[in-house]
Image (cartoon, rainbow, N blue to C red; front, side):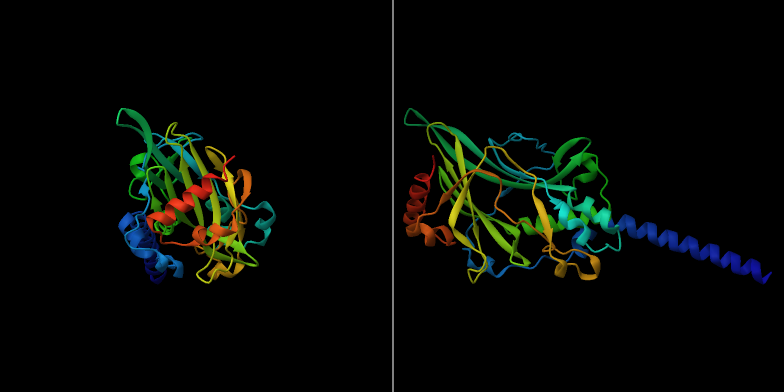
Length: 316
């Protein structure tokens, strides 16, 4: 009799564990729960350098399919990043307590980032001119064979059931991406700073890549230069050189882990960093007279014009 009671209690206990576990998993799939559980990423000190009137890039609409050409609603695909762990670094990774080392490698390559711009044609005094309308950023994953921008809120509607780790990864990614700033936005020129975890020396740091978007007013074509801004003390910056991106850049970026950023084997937002600027077709020297302008975060109209003029002279 006593044995039967123990057996019943064990069964009831297991049922309670299964019920609670199932409820916890269902809760973790709820966007508002994910938002509340995911700690906000550290705010880099350099965020305080920006004028609060500066805007953030537009959010690319969930459901937008992004392949290797500009997605619907945008005239230019500036860069689409497909991250993965650098093969030579995989063996160094700690074993993640939830998904193991192999699962961690898969999770790193699960999500892509996308950076777009929209240039529109306008009539002015009987003449056609092109104007830079907007900058866009987004995150996504492969959904039924198509790379699709998504959010935690839109994932199920778009046909993908996120597991808790994917939901946390996506939420953290968007929170970091929201630290991007449109520093200058003119009719044919923009400066956009995007946060990036960069390998500097033996550690990964939260830095910024700066993109200069230069639109030809008569044709609507765009050239994009990129360079690296550093920490608030100037460490890890490189204002001596810039790279000219390929049109529709697809960056199969290899990430390097910083083993100091894996508390209890769980990576934080600085755990994986890039080592280089994006793929490019040309590297140019930033002239010494404009290097200060190239690194500052607040511009007068005259300073923005001077920088735009100087950068255009670097184009082939």
